[in-house]
Image 1 (tube, rainbow, N blue to C red):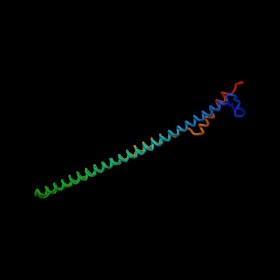
Image 2: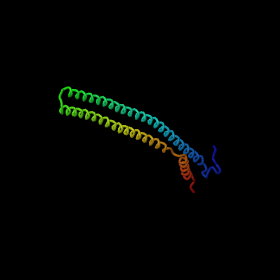
Image 3: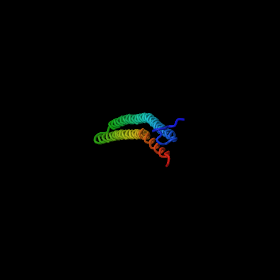
Image 4: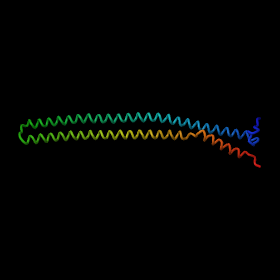
Length: 188
């Protein structure tokens, strides 16, 4: 059996090997904990990368869907405007074909033109409203995406903050060693 003697024994006598074993175990435990925390942080980072890609894909798909919806609204509105214009022209043609004359025909034609213009303006306003809603929806999607990104970044930061520094591991080993040394000193 090898017993540490000389300056390495630190005045501990037969307890010196236990002291050094305790120091070694404390150092190994601290370094293993640090290594495990680093692995967990790397895993959190990798998961965050995957989740961020997924959030980007979801954002793009949602944005595309609302853009398609706006496009369809614009198409149907253009068709509705054309239909109102045709109806207005037909109504004016019918008024002219009625063979009425004078002020009454002019009033009827003006009224028909006003009705057609009002209908087209209502359609224009609906399209403008849909465009503004599209912009609000995109902003909402961007906010959701940014919030998700911030949550992911926060979890990554938190995981990396859980990794003890090498200095703190060594300091804990030294503190534990000092406490063990003091407890192993022979009392006079």
